[in-house]
Image 1 (cartoon, rainbow, N blue to C red):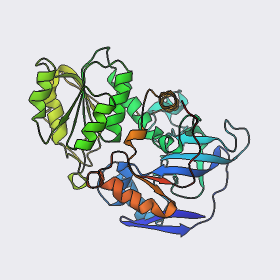
Image 2 (image 1 turned 90 degrees about the horizontal axis):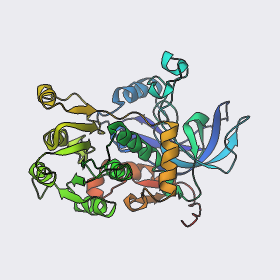
Image 3 (image 1 turned 30 degrees about the horizontal axis):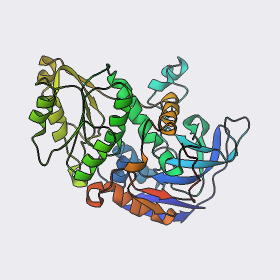
Image 4 (image 1 turned 45 degrees about the vertical axis):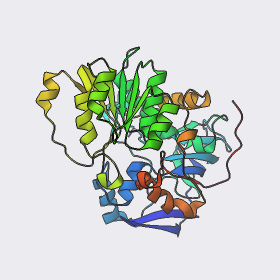
Length: 369
């Protein structure tokens, strides 16, 4: 079969490789729609971010290696023994899996395990004609969800987990820095979780426009306004109850570095919560005494569980969360994968919101809501 393999940073090639076998506890799938995550797109270019050292070691010891492709919709081809799935089912996956043997896993707290494999990083993902995936990672995709929308479910489940971590109170004022895919997802999940005033911040007019369409009460363009006094003015001088920071990361890829984190700290009320969604790719210097003096809670999202992913399927199937309008670039055929990586790594240049998608197979017809 054909599969994309990495020989190093900036070196991906479409190779002929043996088809995987359907081993116990796994299912064979044919990917229908796959998108590189922003993290994957940066790692492919060698930009330090989450898991950079892990990928670097794999290149040094295992290359060429199949990597990435954990955000997908796929159709089941084959199961091994008793299974929750049947051939023909469409599935999506959570990426981070429990190891099954550590004390946390043995004490039925596997959702806290950080020792298990990650699809696309430790296990081959779906940038291939056929993939073998652990059954415990998968959920069935509702017929009301298109293949393209289903490829967004993994990312959206992480946003569900991020908003759950914030433990919103009914009517909380919420600010979200960054209106890329996860920022727009956090916006919609927060709206569905009882948030009151919703304020978003971005530097692109197209992102601000979609943000308003998806429920933001105010979408501030940081290029044309001073966002900190604007947020304080909109929140009665107090600052927001909860802030999600979704914009930080490598400035080389059009991200905000750590500037939005500093703005978020200045925009949250005393005693408020700051949820760090972004990955910065290296250490940061923060005035921890300022956070202590203002009693700020700097929180980090839990990883998404099967329950989060199942709830995400319901949110999209019922129309409570809309992802279609965020999908701006859809390519066709496995040969288009490098182009999808390039667009995703440079979303600002291409005016993309969601990562670029690759339709590996013709779209499955979708039922009307």
